[in-house]
Image 1 (cartoon, rainbow, N blue to C red):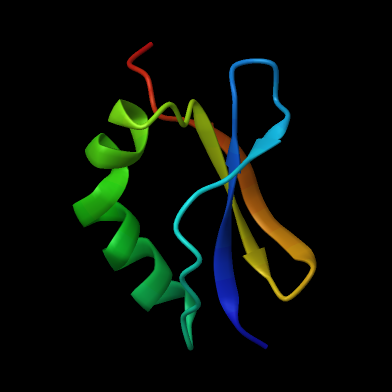
Image 2: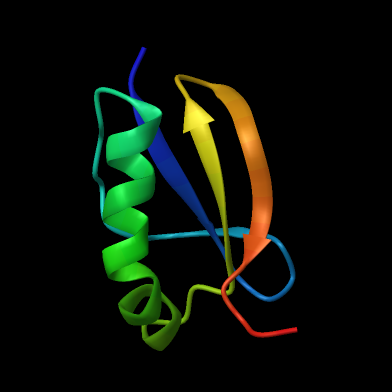
Amino acid sequence: MTFRWRYLDASGGPIEGPDEEFDDQQQAEGWFTDEWRELRNRGVDAVTLLDGDTEVYGPMSLHEA
């Protein structure tokens, strides 16, 4: 399977974001580590990591607690 991120708005609804796919979870998380601030600046409020269509974890807020 391929890993990818689902991007969510403040109400938890899906929104458009970068259409990136990764071979493994570590690559996906590494990309996210570098990009989360830019995602937040573009209006993404939370993300969910997917392995194919299966949720690995999330939603995970991009805002400080």
